Length: 264
Image 1 (cartoon, rainbow, N blue to C red):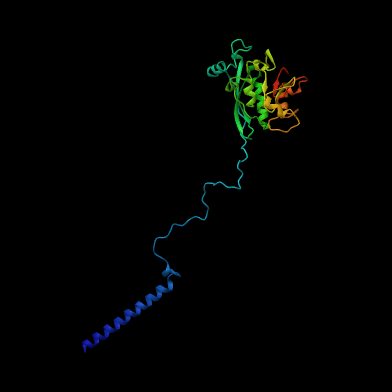
Image 2 (tube, rainbow, N blue to C red; image 1 turned 60 degrees about the vertical axis):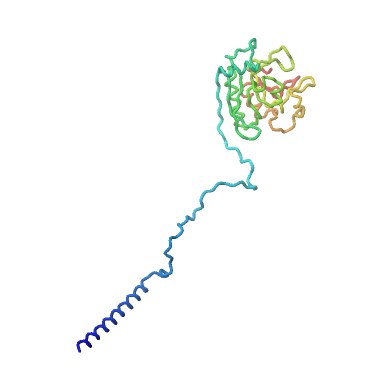
């Protein structure tokens, strides 16, 4: 009898446990988030931001091959001739004992200029100390006007050879030499009172001679050529503002490259 009761109780207890398990399972199913059972448990790939990452620009055939130059402020300095430059000038012959000016009377200008490539460059030129401030003002004005200058190296880079300087289209100042067409007569360049701008596009013309000879193609002054000086253009105005005269206004010969305070 007791065994029967005990068996009956065990059956009832098993049934009760099964019922509790069933109810618990259903409750878990009811409160679990939708789709929770289907989510993977493996490690995920880290989340990537939707913002694009910067990348290196690659060449493009549609891009401009030469971007517009950035405006760089003008820079200009005036300095005495130091010992290394003195030695260079003596070695090249741009200054010699017996020249009309002592080296101590000269100044080195280092200035910004706009090249034929429409970019800012730095050049150097030597002038008389009493003309240095005026020359600096001129190059500041030319830079502001973006007036093109092809080269501005010291004449010593060409052995102070006037023909080589002109052929190289070098804008230059002091050179202890004679007048190109009058040997024995000191040029204004020998006094540091002359500056030549783009000699190739602005040749010196006298008695049917042209220097440099390669400048003959620019004798037609109506041409609109890069680096060519025209009456009353930005170059002429810049020099006129400091009292310098353009050789293109001379009546007999024409020195289209040449500017000087004496008009010679």
